[in-house]
Length: 318
Image (cartoon, rainbow, N blue to C red; front, side, top):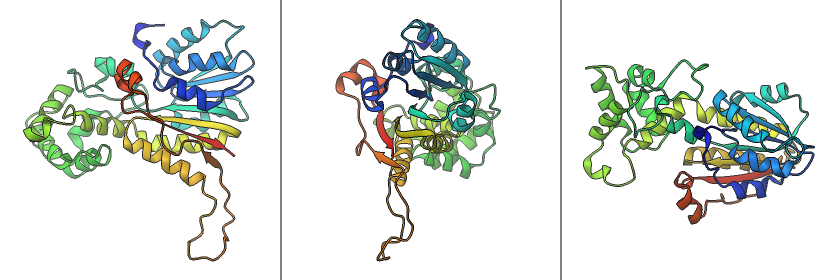
């Protein structure tokens, strides 16, 4: 396994416990990465099961395959590693030729290796071209194009809606003013603009001042919230009765989508409350296993700071 993909899986023990993995199961890791979660899941699945790994990044798929193959044929489940985005989960599972699945994991957000590859432009800590595409080979619009072409109102909307950045309007105004002099092409340029836009008193708390804006742009470039909704809907459809879906989110927008979708699919009636009897006949599709999200322990956060904002939610197909 390459050094680039040696990263620590978040909430690993909690995921394995709640996914209820067993022999003869079909398990989907929809965000395979370097197989941090799947490597341990494979040990529980055994050789009579199927592990389907999905990732947009061919480097991740190659690294994951090498790592999973170290388990040996007698211990590892059968592998199907597919390149793609979980927003296209229906097509990917049709490609995998499976009738249904017993467990699926979504580990959302940008992966550690993607952040660490400076040239990908995800990090506000290193100066690099403003890219932020998770699948550069199939995506045409990058962060620099958004920054340099959208009007001030659209930039404000993207920054605020995707990150709850209170200074979104001011940041957008400063971006538009700066690009009149020269195109904004690097993360370093954008960081300087954001720092200038946010008052000094507000920059003293809450972490790096560019964190929220970079998050907002990454979400927009990769259509992450739309992809999450379509991926979750597909996962719920493909789950066998008793199958479980587990989602690790890293910011409130993702967590809200997961919480609301789980709640929507676990409702028993959608009739207006003023009706004396139910006429819709709606039946719940899911049972929510985690009424409150599972959070990392202080020990895990100390060992892996990137786990700090993680939240795990789990639901079961009825």
